[in-house]
Length: 334
View 1 (spheres, rainbow, N blue to C red):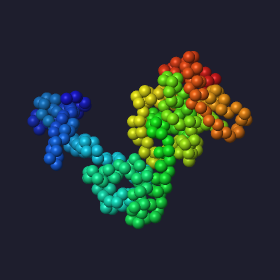
View 2 (tube, one colour):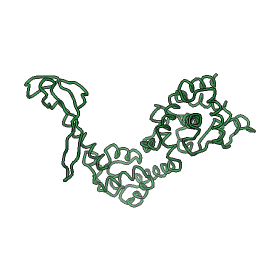
View 3 (cartoon, rainbow, N blue to C red):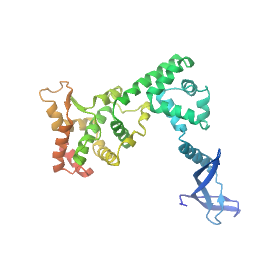
View 4 (cartoon, one colour):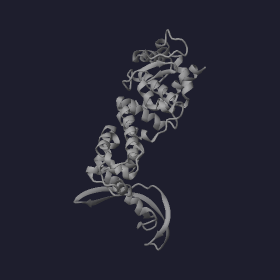
């Protein structure tokens, strides 16, 4: 057992206040004729070795068992249900009815009742698939108010656009959100471009298949622009985008490393400095040939041009290290 933290409470064996150590203990519990192994937190008296029951420990054990049981049985969590409510801007009752449940079902689940596997699968499918959620909304539209229906349908239709792009680019976006506290649409566009460039420099391959275009303000991935254009120059913040959670599982360890490398270097700058760097690079400049300053264009920046440029710069800079990338950034910014 692994020691974690020390506290003081009353030991019923020692009959006095004693220090205790929190440890992990494995137990086997039979639920519905099936054995489950749970790892629970226990409190052990440092003086006599007896188990103790400090305040909050029983509640903690209940929560630990609940979480582990749901994992064993692949049952959605309370967090998953709250995410679904946030994504579709629906209250407990309307969401219950929209999914074909009784009106208080979601309320019971939020209070701790564990869903059946059938209902859990419906909730999970609604969480990961806007198309499935639209289907449920259509089937149960007469059970909810027009306002709730219209709001949820609009959110589902907007989220469907997410699935027009690759899992890889969604994974990169989520990984960037995870690494950085604040990202504007302009900053995101440039970071995606640098992720491709640094991937080419280190592994001679792109991470995601999408192509970017040479817009006035630098490289832009049009599909991603559409997803986030509503935020304009503001940081991207919207509860619907919790649907990105877990998409970084689509990235390999090598790919995640590249994204983290970019986040820890280029990610230290806002959108405008990053834009100025791309304006000095051959891929954007070559694609913009013949266009005057400020003249819109949607010319393709080929992956080949990004590859050639970053492989050439890799000879001068070490793009496998933060130091090499930061040296490149500093020289491009001056």
